[in-house]
Amino acid sequence: METIAQGKDTQPGSLFRRSDVASLQLRAVIGVVFTAHGAQKLFGAFGGGGLDAAANAMAGNGLKPGMFFAVLGGISEFGGGLLLLFGLLTPLARLIITGVMVLAITVSSGQNGFIALDRLGYEYNLVLIAIALALVIAGPGRLSLDHQLGLDQAVADRVRRSRTTHH
Image (tube, rainbow, N blue to C red):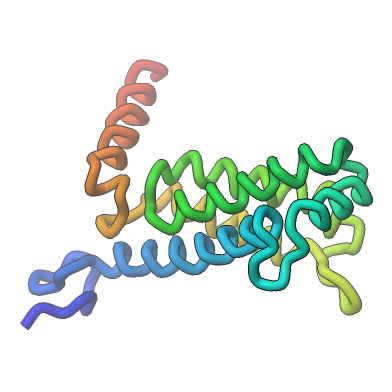
């Protein structure tokens, strides 16, 4: 009987490598978190205030016009989260998530310090950036749409070609 993941990363008899399962787990958790935050902004889901509340918050953090940044932030979080969740265009998802988190640190949590007892510090943002970067380095795994569509191999081939032409 085949197991989902056991033993070494490439042990025969495993249906998937450990790294595939680990990538899926990270993509799923972070993807759901970002999709949910985007849904709060765009649709008022999960107790979010919707676009009007997000626009007021954005404007209050100096991002004006607030509605533009609320829509941009909501679409970035929702869309980037979905891309990451499904492992589709993973490098693009990483850029989106990293950009959103760098902006959050710059305009909001960064002023609170690394760890803040009474409000959000920027340590959480750094964790999300690190996970997004690690997923790009490790790749989306075989349990991703990138792998199913051959996009992960196409990106790897392009990187290899660019490294050999620049050296």
